[in-house]
Amino acid sequence: MSIKVGGTAATVIALLLPARQTWLEVRAREDAQELAKQAVTNYQLALRSVLLPLTDIFDRIITAPHEAGQTEAKGAAKQAVVNSVVQFTDVPRARSCYFDYEHHGEERKLVCRIYAGRDAKPQTEFSSSDPTHLEVFKLLENRQSVRIENIALEDYSRFALDRHYTYQTYISVPVATSAEIFGLLTLDALHPGELLPQHEKEMLLLAQLLGIALAGGGGHPRS
Image (cartoon, rainbow, N blue to C red; front, side):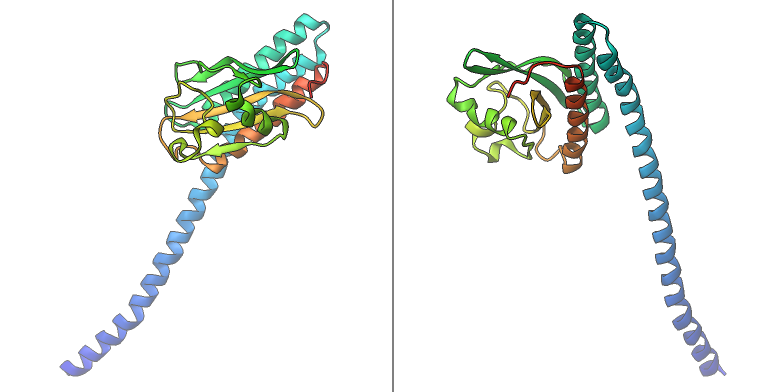
């Protein structure tokens, strides 16, 4: 009798264990799917919270009745995008900057007048007359974005966006259309690896929207 009971118990256990494992795997998949759905929902809500205010500002640029109104709206759009980059990427102590692309005779410059996040304005003004800055202008004029995970592992002259930098990772994205360059949008953070490919994609979206809005307000081609 003991042998029969033991055999029956062993059979039941042999059947139940795989069934329990299957149930656990199904439950884990369901939980993962629910978490994924929630993450998508949260992402969509965050995206709307960023984009909806921007569309109002962009509309002001296009509909402004005079140049002064356009200039004011463009400044507000730049600041809103810089704020949105910090808000949307949500990296601790990150800093976003907008560099205006300017011409001074034959010299081209990138000047940061707008920034948000970490309370320290970039100290470097980029000039095409400085050989160590030429790579920055080349990337900008080719409409190329850059994401550097760790500046310490890269060539300083090519990738350091600020001679007095304290950050260790950054992303730079051109603000431009196919016909016109307006500026450079950047995001930097204090620790290597904090800025991810998804952050670059988000910045590209915001930079493209800003470029379209600035072009919609009129102006003379710069490149």
